[in-house]
Structure formats: structure tokens, C-alpha cells
Image (cartoon, rainbow, N blue to C red):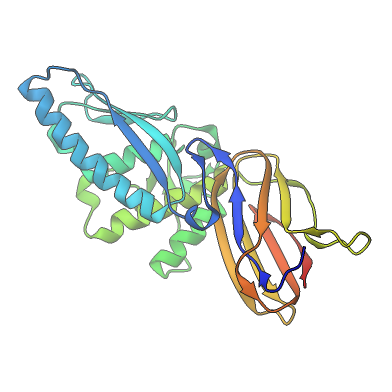
Length: 280
């Protein structure tokens, strides 16, 4: 096979709860929901369905724009629920109080779905009233431009930007910051462990071309790929969504670059590996 132009495209093929994703799009979320409805709703139920739909559509707008999370949620209107509640199994229930059928509450409960206060991964990171996860803490510092910022928390909630009460929302940034912090928390909950990887490029011994970089994760995590010229200039920086444990493939093809050697670095949680690949 002859390569007249040098091509590098990052296409990661992986399977998660939402299916198969293109690597370029994986930095966007793919959260969907199903609202359980009775076939012949009462006036109360019809009104609740409309309010819940509006709140969930708005909440998903923020989560799918500012996170890389993927999941299908199951939404229930249950009048006996005093406010609303979210479960790590993907279920969110809204009670009859209309004050909680709003974007802030929907996003708050989505945080519970993604582990806030509902998993040991979260609870283990609360120490003396402080959430100690590095990724979420660093994200808060960046968002607030405050290097001393700290995420406080207890067994079920975090603050600031936990959206624990709708009254906390003062601007659209409160929604955005919440989503980005919850997204960063996933890296703290599920630190990646890379157990193996190969080196792509031209195999000198055989002359066989390989454009596949493969790595194996011991646990669920996101993966960041950076590509550099040999003088250290970054050419690409791309991040996947949350990948399941197992083997994942990154295919290098289709974006023109000069022939020659390039460095790549793959970061998973607190670990990273790197190497050089060659095209001609």
C-alpha cells in the first residue's frame, strides 16, 4: 500500500452504554431520557409531564454540551416523593411539588445518577467535609480563577455548584459549572489503569503499515490523546468520553501531515504512556 499523503485521524471505536461513538464527537455528552407516562393522564399528570419534560430538556442541554457523559435515564412522576430523587441506577423521580420541576433540580438529580452521593467512589473522597478528588478540584479552580477554591461536601451533596437548591442559581454559569464539575468527578471516581499498549507506525522488520494504537483499561475512564511534532509542538489534543474497561482502538489515518516522525501521548487518569510513530 502506498501513502501519497500522510494522514492522521483519531477515530476511537468503543462500546459504552450509548453505543459506538466517533472520537471527535465523544467530548460531547450523549444522555437521553424516557419519561414514563400513563396512557390517559389526569390534568395533574399532564401538567407534571409538561413541566418535567421542560426541566429535563434544559438539563440535558447543559449536560450534553458541557460533559462527555452517556446514559439513558428513566424519569418518573411519583406524587408521593417529597421533592425529587436520583439513583445511580439511572432513575429520577419527581414529586408533586412544582417548585422542584425545574432545570436546577433536574441537573442536581442527574449528579446523583452519575455517582454524587450514591456511590462509595464519591463518599470515599469526602474527607473532613471536603471533596478531595483532584480532577474536580482542579476544574473548580479553573472555572472560578481561584487557586484556593475548595469543593465542600457531605455524604450526599457537594458545594458550590451542586445545585442543591434552585435558589442557588444566579446565572447560566451555575448550570455550566455544575455540569463540568460532575464531569470531572467521573475521573476521580474511576481512575484509569492502563495495562498494555502497542506502538503504531511502520514495522521496520516487515515493512507492514499499521495505523492502529491499542490500549487496555482495567477500569472505566476517559482517554486523552495528544500528538506532537518532534520539536515538541502540539498538533492535536483530543479526549474521549468515558470508556468501559477493556481494549480500545485508536486508528491513525486521514488528516494530511508532512511525512516523518511524530510523538503521541495517551493519558488515562493519573497514568500516561507515549511513543513515536512514523509515516511515509
